[in-house]
Image: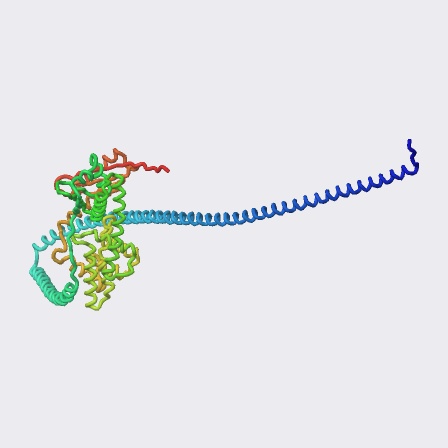
Length: 530
């Protein structure tokens, strides 16, 4: 065996331990370096990732904010538009409700005023009857007293002395002389009147020469042309329901006879006749004729006639040179276009009176504007005398006071029928102009006016009964059609009203033949499916 140095072995072992330590140290350092490098690289990667995520998050946030701003703006615009629509709808509905409320209040006021006037008129009539009864009783007492006095005087005269007889003769002579003096005074007054009339004729003839108006006499029948006779059957309808609905809604008499391609509309009320004419022409042009369509077209025709009335009133005021009239007075002037007096159109007559009165006032140096205004408005009461109690003069005075016309105008128009004493030149001129317009040849027809008055009286009798809503005289006065309120009048009451109206017509009117009284009671239930 080899021998070993004792000191050699430990030294070699020490060297190996140092190398091992160096190796371990280097390994640890390399591992630590690798670990640190790994952590550093990982940190860098994490930083890049975090940066990318943060950038994406910021981009998403920015886009979200822009989208939120855009959505907010759109929402605000939508809200504003919706608010505007709601506001407009609310304003429209509010305006409609206000208009309906105003119309309802006006109708109530008119009904209340009419009732008050009617009650006042009835009270005045009752008072007048009481006064007449008292006057009649007083007259009877006076007649009886005069009879007794006459008997006493006859008894006394039979025993007269010469002086008493002479005194009686002188009294008779004195009375005769007074009578002759009165005749002389009357002759002098007549001569003065003739001289005044000669001077007036010059002024009047000048006014008439300067103004000449066309005049067309009105009738009570309108003619509607048809495209063919086949349309007559459609107008009549199945079992006559169309023609019944049309006559009930318009208050006219529809005459369908053998006249080729024509239908006659008969009614004494010209406004009703005009509404019926327009409605029938539109139904014929449309071709759709049934009760519901008839009701719709008739209502539209009524509105159109109201518009025509307003336009005619404005045109009349402009033609007469009268300005500043209340809108309601203008509307009533327009209604006069469809009103006639003794066959003379009242609106044309009013324009004539206005022009004539204005011309005569200008010739005499009076107030021309006042005369024109009073002449134009002198028959304004005829626009509503069918609906209001009293003469057209009294009604006209009330209307002018209601719409704030001057007292001078009211006085000038109130004297044209002699009901009031004239106190101004303009009042006399309006009266003269009215007489001139009415008295010229061909201006008026008495027979037609009497016929219309009989029809008006026929409707007035029916309207006087409680529960009657509308009354129409048709077929030239041979039939009266009456619509009653179903909530107040039942079927039995309708029969009773028909009998009472017939008896009253027999008692108060004179007419040839017979008059048919038809009472119509209709109940409607209306509901809307929403």
